[in-house]
Length: 400
Ligand code: SF4
Ligand code: SF4
Image (cartoon, rainbow, N blue to C red; front, top):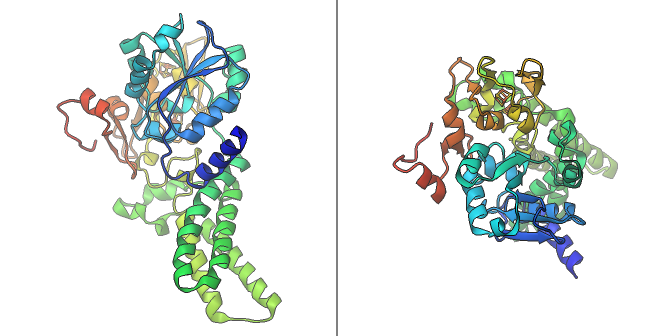
């Protein structure tokens, strides 16, 4: 039965979400699309494709699945696996041009940090627009052709937070459980229970734990910023750990069988799990730039003279940082502190009116943000896709 297989895949892929999960890049017909049916595009991360198809139930549309190495939209776009090249490649190879009379393509909004819309248009003649952040908003967006502020805004609701808790709890408990099973089988169940409790607590209480404290990070010099102990948010993680240890003590008291060695052992093991899961809590969310990324220290600067008020920044910003003054045809950065340094506005601005500036006042060339993508440590490097190599032919792999 299809729904059982679908539910099973959903559970397995959620548990193993840290791994790429590629599905075949292709053209999918949803319902009975005609020659004027909307054309949407997404990444080839299997979980995302299934969720988009679920959201599109009852619609008539074409869905293009681009080759993004099985990685989700937000991460593949930031990491250089989802760029204009992948979009151009699927537009040219899928046969979609024979299926429709128009050339309007709806991209996921969170791909704006990697897919240069202008490049897609120049190379293919397709006019790309950025649809809503969430797949569930697609029917409303398709019905009105209008994206509300709500549809633009990225959030991290409880259900998503619990999904991330599962994403962390499953591998930690599986690896720890297998190791313990080899020598201390009676500890497996308590360890698994501990890993899940801590992960659920950290992500469940995330709004109260908050992201990385930027000021502390700015003041932290050189390589030490990669050490979690220098991160002021560690104090909030320690509160979660202390609450867990208090729970352990309460359990021992209830049993009336104090075992100090067991308490120390479980205390240390829980501290390790809290630090492991919480080390980059901000980076496990769509709300903050990873605490390990150098880009988190940048701030956005607007050249008001160059701005023509075309509102692409407003269109793609997942944190609704911009407002557009429609009389003066100028953008204003209304919420600079909400910026997560995703770079989408810099990549998409047609007038090159936006740029990142370092804490020391150095302006990062706009081309660097467009061309160089983030590696795992958040440094900008040329993405090593064959397409990128061809596009930047002659350039050796180097860091910006
Ligand atoms: S995208 Fe650029 S030109 Fe357009 S409103 Fe924003 S800053 Fe101004
Ligand atoms: S203002 Fe910040 S969060 Fe908004 S698109 Fe630009 S870089 Fe991203």
